[in-house]
Length: 250
Ligand code: 13P
Image (cartoon, rainbow, N blue to C red; front, side, top):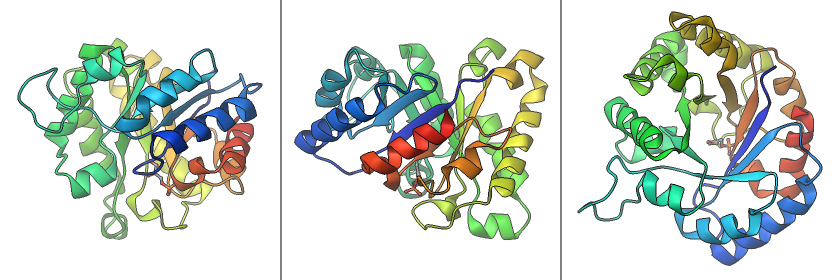
């Protein structure tokens, strides 16, 4: 009932010419895979090339971040409105790298989610615990805090359109993937947390897993009942791996 959603976060990789080439290869490799929603998130700089390349394809384009404000004296920022105008559909918000390295607090993440709704971008809200938080038994507390901040002030209808990406920080870029059961348990917790809204919300919200997803482990993760897709980092730069992950989802 929930359509699988696979997104590739290219992080700070691929200058525009290389990004265009990767987009072209993915467009060919994935053209028949219509049973899942698919998106890629290039750097801001490569967005125009990738949007152009993927027009009339089954692959959408996401940004990796958005500014809080729509426009103004905010040096170095790019607004959700500008991204929308450039043909972007989705925005990743609250990625752990932004939270850890660039000061995206829960309050900032909340404003960025609001910015997505203001501009008409679909938000992919990232949540997830660090290793010390997991070891201290705080997974549910951390995820609940991030959800309640990130989804603050949204209507139930709005929440139902958000994608949640559960990305345990200890699994990102480390090759240490959560086991399918570990991931599914947290996804189930997230869905139960969504039970505070009318029931269609928990039924509709798609929850992606992210953290060292590869072609070789995707099937195990994606076959779990509460895992609706993946947010893929490193493996999204490989046409072969990303294709295998999309196949595993469909
Ligand atoms: P890796 O797949 O490289 O672990 O990265 C996951 C991620 O951060 C996606 O947003």
